[in-house]
Image (cartoon, rainbow, N blue to C red; front, side, top):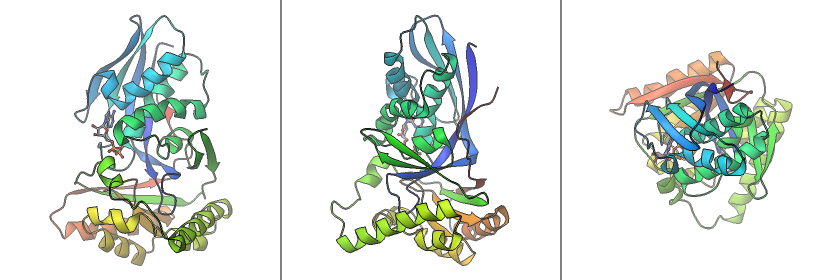
Length: 307
Ligand code: ADP
């Protein structure tokens, strides 16, 4: 096999109480990429479609993660990467992560899968660091493994795969404003009051338990963020209104997706997720802010080959 076409999914990181550690994978939103073996040694981005992104491998997250993997293998050929981007960069649903995992997943398939998903995440972290200026894996892990993942530690990298209740669905609204991950990180407090920390880790533990037991009532009470959301939500117009409308419409929880500006909600069942969609979009429809909205099952398989 000399060429492979893949679907690299969008992801939601943080998931309210799991800042920097928790994430889940979306089903209906993602990029496509083609990875091809070529005679010339090295890593080359040969085509980018959808959004304006760098062609220099060192400046594109797909190229940086590919270069990290290329250094670790001994081959007498190179790789060419085509990126068909559907996930808008800076939207907060793992645009950079989809590219970072896509290149290394595709290369790994073409050379007979010498690396496991955790090792692929290690390479992808190098690419993700180009976009967010720090090494984190909370979008990368769900994109590669699928479902819900928890990054126990980055060094050494330890990823836990969490169960996904079968009828859990997400609704994601993306107001068309840009927030850079680096800008959004700058708003974070250096210190967290102990009472808030206690609330946060109680909620994260409860959410993990709720995923294991499909306890939707517990999930509903655990999907709260008292540490990051109060600061970051200021960057997202009508955040509180969208959140309130979605909870009133029956969502289990709502919060900032990654570093924003997208807002995610979780619902029990596709029908409920669509009711929540109506409520969320009605808020932005009354404003002059353009938006995209997606309803998606949780993708339990993660990145996949499509040819
Ligand atoms: P997101 O959370 O949606 O991934 P980030 O702010 O983390 O958004 O990353 C987007 C930044 O990464 C943009 O500045 C973009 O130009 C840069 N970037 C470089 N290569 C890529 C790529 N292949 N895909 C997406 N973003 C990329």
